[in-house]
Image 1 (cartoon, rainbow, N blue to C red):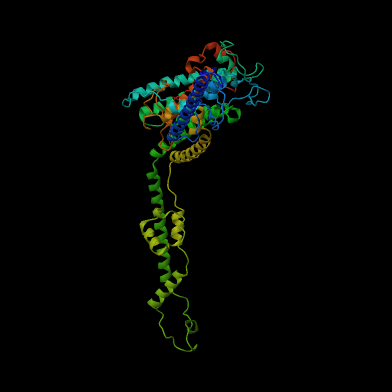
Image 2: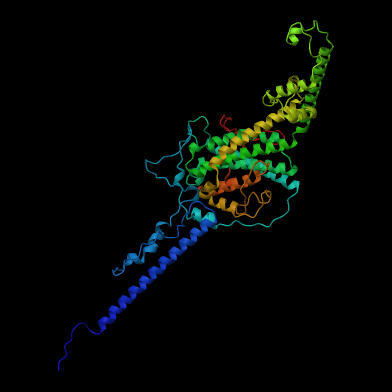
Length: 546
């Protein structure tokens, strides 16, 4: 009996079944991975929503949306591309640029650059070597600042020490930025001055001398402002003469950080920061000037002058009425003018007017006289008797009103100057705030300065604890400066600005005071001072420090 073998060997069905089993397992694993990715994406979106951010930016560690599953009944061959899909996607997002230079610009001829000043040597700020820095969104939402132990408010001597330290540091940075900036001009330019000890050719301070000079200038401005604020805190006052010496240096810094010269919104944010410093200084002067302005003396002087003018006008009215009543008429009225049926008839009424008719005529006159008189002065500046008369009848004698309107109080020239300064500070503060809020906003801080943004948002400090953080601490909690109308916030603004400077300057190797050019005698006398030298604020003693 012979056996006829048909079909396949007994081992073949087992092999086919094993292949199908592995395929099902791989498909199940891919489906599970896609589900995990969807859950991660949903959790990230919820995290963004909780933090109140407008733009839902997905983290770079998550791959794009997975492809849809194949239709049922179709076979899909698994190869190395399917197995390495996740790693390939992650590799595309692994390279990241510095957070402060998010705008990637092409180095081809079609790229656009900021236009340097006349004679200034151009530097390619976009040639910064990329570093393995975390992305903006992850820093702003995951970084938590160091929470330092809280202490009570220091004594006045502590604030005086801060003033002496940071005002001196401001002088160092201001000198360094000024000298370094002049070294960026072309050698044939009138403002060019070589550095006494130039940095090595391959160092960041040589490659990016222009932007480092600008950072030193704005940090010097922050040091000056912080030192003067600390001096005010030592006596809970505001030295107006000292703050006014900041105007020239503020204008010089604005010229160096014009938006037209900026490469991205991070650089324009420094322009807004400088304007906000000016706004807070003006608001502080306005607040303390208004708090000490003797408004009561001004009001009392004007009230006295108005009362005296009204009294004299009333006496003049009484004198005119008395003269009119004592004057004898030159001739009697004719009977025809009195009225009657005949010119020869006897008058039916005596010369004394009827009180009822007089009241009626006066009522008629008042009813057709129109709306109340518009006062040329505020009603609360009128004497009480005329205030009652105005509110009851709506009328005040015209000559009395004119006399009160022409009254003038006595104001000392110094007091008049303080009123003029108050008006000017209000105007300047509003103008500076209008510019600063255009360039320095929370969305800009989130995108361009994520670490500083996180330090301001994730903070437990109160708005009145400006003295709590250390000005040298780069990891402590900060706070958004808030409103300027209460005369406060300058300390927070300086702390936030210093954090912005060091976060922006990190990709350029900026080191702050450690990299500043020391002031030496040869560098000071090697070239006569030119008109391009930046001004410097004066100390409270009125000395111009160079």
